[in-house]
Length: 128
Image 1 (tube, rainbow, N blue to C red):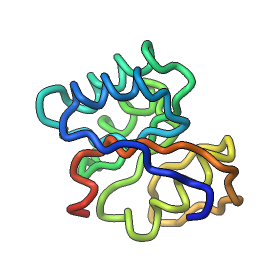
Image 2: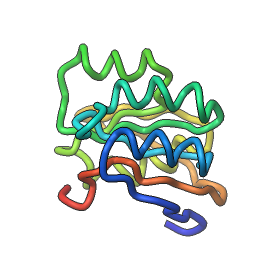
Image 3: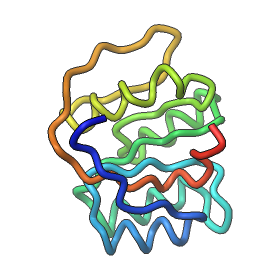
């Protein structure tokens, strides 16, 4: 995607929190199942330390209560790894344009995005 730069990839939740505070990225991709500190706990800390950063969860977890917990924390989106091939780019575009995105059986329509810094803090994204 043009005008998007990955600025860091963290290997665990604690590192994700540290780097989010340091880099203050526009968008953070965060997995629920991070080692050391899970994604929900990491998101709570990130909301305090990098309040302008938007969080997009990318996770294999698809239970409604987990998705809702992530959104209740202030996440701008949630993409299941099962749908990441079709939804991830659309979610990034929607969120950097100021919208929200949640994986569903139907894909959401999005608009083009401006230049943004993106921190891939999903940990396991290379395995998707």
